Image (cartoon, rainbow, N blue to C red):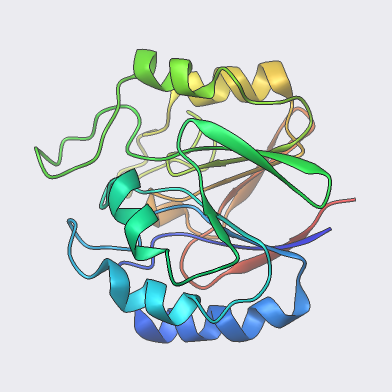
Length: 200
């Protein structure tokens, strides 16, 4: 299965157009949140991405709520928005949880959850599937510009317990494009340029 993974478009229309072109050569598209900027401009990219005809799985970032993403994604007929729930695509189980985890320092506008809330939303994650989260597992692809780790312990715990084949995240811009292994799981901080990953 070939996946096109991206995150953190933040209203970048040209990046969205490139992702539409890249989607022709993959089986599934995964968007790991932050389509908007502080709840503004979400349709700027979603209206472009709606041209993607491949099955697509999306989670909200901390810049938009799940409800805002569901509303903006309505024209994108092949997209499924997940947040504390799952779906199946071509026989592969997916689970998705969006938002900033743990709570960010950005203030009231940020769509955030604490570790306990995240653990509750993650508990249905299936074994050996694909986990789509906005925030990275702690101590993985989550190093900010000062080198501090900014990821989630709850996400790391579920990755270690359920051993997904692929974990797609974003959120920490300084680690865009980086990949690490946590056990059998390939963990990718996707970024807006898009990364194609092939998983048997």
